[in-house]
Every structure is written in structure tokens, then in C-alpha cells.
Figure (tube, rainbow, N blue to C red):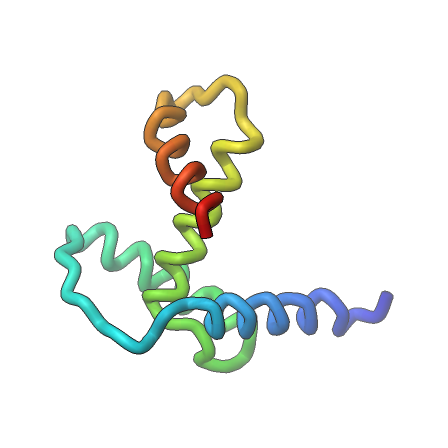
Length: 96
């Protein structure tokens, strides 16, 4: 494995996520300032690791939803007690 392989994998995954995220329609979503700032921080960190501005906030939201769905599938005992919430995300994501 070369030192470029992890980065190439990150770029491939980011490009795939961005291509799969619907960008044709924009909707207005009200977010708390904390949530908006956190999404922006994650977006900026991901783009920084990619060395280009490939991902936008829509991509980060989709990634978060996918992560919540996957998280639900791997945890039996959820210390944060959000299992019922992630179950809904998991079930909905499975329909895709």
C-alpha cells in the first residue's frame, strides 16, 4: 500500500457521495446556529483532507444520515439512548 492510497480512497468515496446526493433542488432548512456551524466545520475538514472543495453541506447531511443508519445497525446498547431515533433513520435508509 502506498501512502497515496488512503487519500485516493477518500477522494473516491467523497466523489461518489457527492454524485449520489441530489443537488437538483434546494430547499430551505432552518438549523440552529450550533448545528449549522458543526456541519460547516465537518464540510471544511473533509474538503481540507481532499485538498479541494468537492463536498457541500448537503453532502455532509447525507453522510450524517448514512452514519446514523449504520450506527444503529452496529450498536446493541446505546448509551446515549437514541436507539429508537436511529432505528427510524436506519429503516428509511434501507429503503433506498
